[in-house]
Image 1 (cartoon, rainbow, N blue to C red):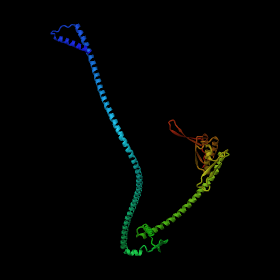
Image 2 (cartoon, rainbow, N blue to C red):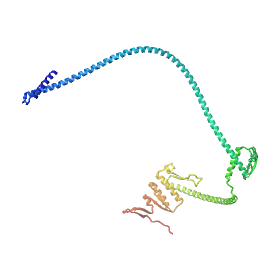
Image 3 (cartoon, one colour):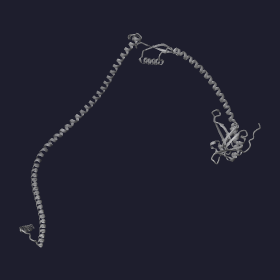
Image 4 (cartoon, rainbow, N blue to C red):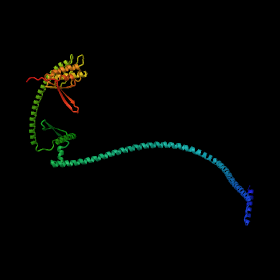
Length: 442
């Protein structure tokens, strides 16, 4: 293929040289030109394929060359490695001999080291025991040092306090000596000789009048004398300062006391008079209450028997011995029932019982007029008729104003009053006289 390509190129070059040599271009033949063009295209295609094949061959040659170089390098490395392995095996053989010698020496050294380790362990245990003993001794010594330091601080503080106390005591003694000399003109030696702690101390006894008398002498005890001094200072402080006007004040207070005593006697007499008046009033009230209760109880029994035919009602005192503070119990037993407590009665029975009590009070202590507000609202026709008969009796001596919605109650009235609303929404009071009121001749 390469040879054919070279032939085509040589023919093409010949044709080109001949074309360049001609002075005038000849009229080409179209068929020849087409053939040449086809031949040229074929030649170019062949050239491209040849170049591609050449490039492929060159790359294969380069790859084969590179592989040959790599194989040569690997063979060289293998040869070098084989020589190195031989050298290492020889070195290992020499090292094995040396290692055997070293192992033998190391075994001997190991035996020596083990014996040394055992001796070292024994020595370490002995040293650790000695160190623990020394640590305990150090701790005890440190504790003793701390205790001694605390004791030293306490002793130092005690000494300091003692020095301060001695200095204060000396200063106090000097002040007392100066005070005794200034106020009493007596030096310290005389005070010690006459009033020292070795001398007995007199006691004083106070009678009921407040006078003091000297008692027996007792030995000097500082604590007891300090207590006596504190008590005397407290009593002196309570007395206060000396008042030069005490006698005049005492005289005025004595007169004031006499005046107040006279006033107190007057008050006692006034109190006795008031108590007598209160007792007489209480006696009168008790008498009036007893009489009124007796009359009311009597009337209640009668009215209850009329309102509850066959029944029984009574008024009882809760504390008959103390009429002023006693309460009143109402016992009501309607006919056919055994109960006596008001709370167990029906609403109509309780209402009629209350009306009976009111009427009993009205009869026991009459009044010019009475106002009754729907007292018969809860009553049936029978009980209402009985109540109306009682009201007829009351109206003989008193005027009755009854607020009611019952027609039967309205029928017994003399005059009716009512409130009606007119068509314009205004309330209007209306009245209607049912019968003429009979008046007694003057």
